[in-house]
Length: 79
Image (cartoon, rainbow, N blue to C red; front, side):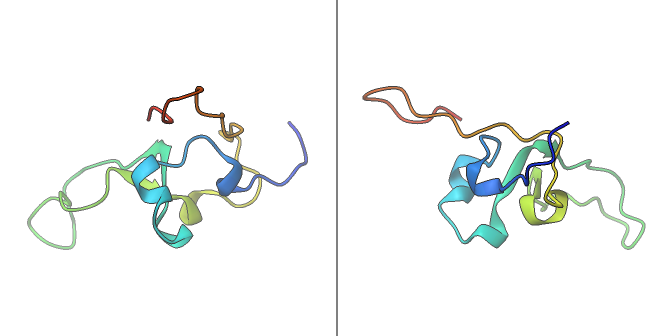
């Protein structure tokens, strides 16, 4: 494993719509939120984002880091 720092702004796994917002709201597509019964209330956590926030999962050495791909010529990044 590399000792290089992994920065989310350079990672391909940031969810495209969240990348348009402030970085603290970015979501990582490689860290799916586990939806289960809430032990705080009687309902499930269904109003949560489908992925975890990048700031919560990247401590600077993310093993799931993948360099940001360049969009195909004339096309959008397809995520």
